[in-house]
Length: 284
Image 1 (tube, rainbow, N blue to C red):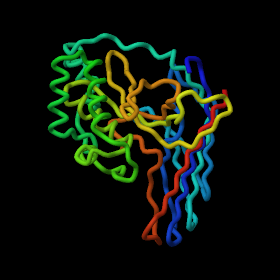
Image 2: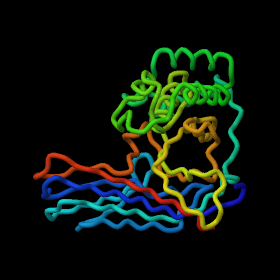
Image 3: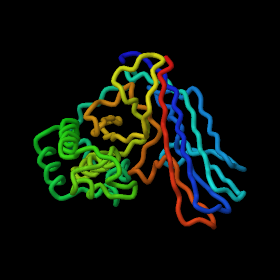
């Protein structure tokens, strides 16, 4: 897919509580982001039950919709629908920067939040050593790609083994995980060798070249970006360039900065059952 494409995305989350809750308050980060290569054309958020909605852009530049249900309820349905156009040819190529530039004090000051480790991106010792080795023999961009390949080759993708709160070191130890684990490991390794890196949240169309009118069931996806004068996007889970199959929603230090939905409930329940479905449709 070399030209522009358009997708319709429906992200549905159903929360079922074992007893009625008095109220619920949630932040949703489900709106595709406006950037030079991606244009959100439509977005709608439906919540049942709901009494209040508010939106703002958070510190990391991600659109947030706040929804609040104040009447007692046994379930909560959140349905986000969007239409977005992507043209990856509008992405600017990376600058061929050396380590002396990306490790400069001015860069560290500017991107300090994307150089500091977090609990979720804590890098295991052996991966840290491998990253140091690669950084010593490759340019920053080449080293970042080799580090991505190291993580990709070491892990097997398997759902249900880790949780959203799990540090990436757990996935590394077991050698299994999901996209957020791949992204956290690469981000942590890149920061370890002094290359600013951030976590990216969005969607990935499952098939490589979908026809217009084709639909697929997908899920939220995560990848990484590293800084070389501009942010370079790469998908370590699939070991591919980020292009027209990827829909950008938000960026942050790790998953905790850009969860699709997070919130609290007040009173009455002891357990919650969550069902999520993401449907993608190529419309142009």
